[in-house]
Each structure stands twice: as structure tokens, then as C-alpha cells.
Length: 109
Image (cartoon, rainbow, N blue to C red; front, side, top):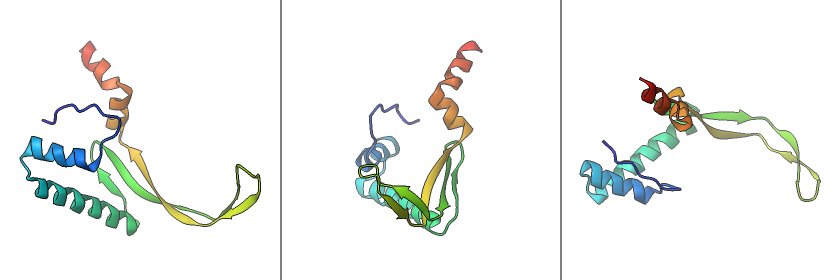
């Protein structure tokens, strides 16, 4: 069971430390594990495939068409080129946890 860590931001170093403390990884093993996981995520998205993590959410890539935009400082129009952008769609379970619905339902049972 992972201990509750309350931080504003969790950095790679924090994940490495968590793998060391909670799962007995050496520092080098934890770094290698995270790097390989992130590389797998990036490669999957680069190929245009979705990455679904059950109970957490789905990472995917969305194609954006060329469009006309406006510089907010000058008001001058500019063409924004077509591009691919990654996005994240949280699972229902994650949304409920973030919104506290599971905690309130559990208290009523």
C-alpha cells in the first residue's frame, strides 16, 4: 500500500524515492523503471495510439487543424499551424476520487 503523500507537485525524484521506500527498488532500478515507463508512454503516443491505465485514465493524441489565431498582446492575426497535441481523459473512478464522491458514499454505507 502506498502511503499518502501530500505535495503540490510530484517530481521524478519523488517517484524514485517512493519506489525505493515502498517497493525496495535500488535507486538505479527505480530510475531505470521510471525512464522505461515514460519512454513506453512517449513511444505509444508518438505512434498515434492511446495509452489506457485502468482506474486512472487515457492518454491520447489529438490532431488540430491549421487555424487563424490572434496575438493577445498586439491583436495581430496569425496562422497557427496544424499539430498533434497530447491530452488526458481521466477515468470515472479518478474523477469521483478527485471530487470526493467515493469518500462521501463510503461514509453513508
